View 1 (cartoon, rainbow, N blue to C red):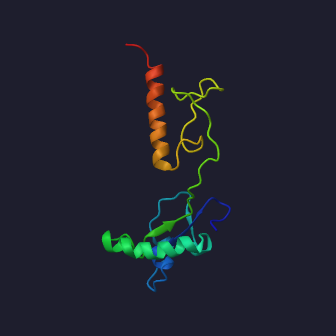
View 2 (view 1 turned 135 degrees about the vertical axis):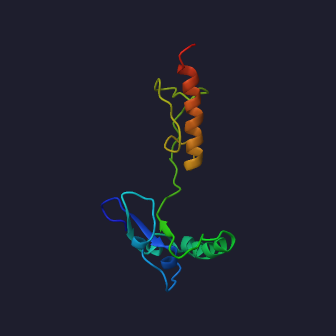
Length: 136
């Protein structure tokens, strides 16, 4: 739905919830580059997801001011699919079969999302810095 130019499908909360005062994503603020294309996110998400979002947005909007503001741009779709494999690594986080290779993060099967991938990368970086630091 984003097109062939790597634009992401997007929709404002107002459009998504069917509010009459809804504006399009071109009048909204978004952070994804290279850009977004206005679309109906109901067309790229299954009903069991959109129905939960339709209930969750107003719920959180009552608790966090502005969370469900009609002009907020919802950019999608990010998946929570992790690597179907795990690359081996030892206690020092080095691959047992490829010397000097440090498998880490989601692609190597050691994380399930952006935060756990960041932590796995940071922990691996600390081990590498300790191992390869120049002696004083």
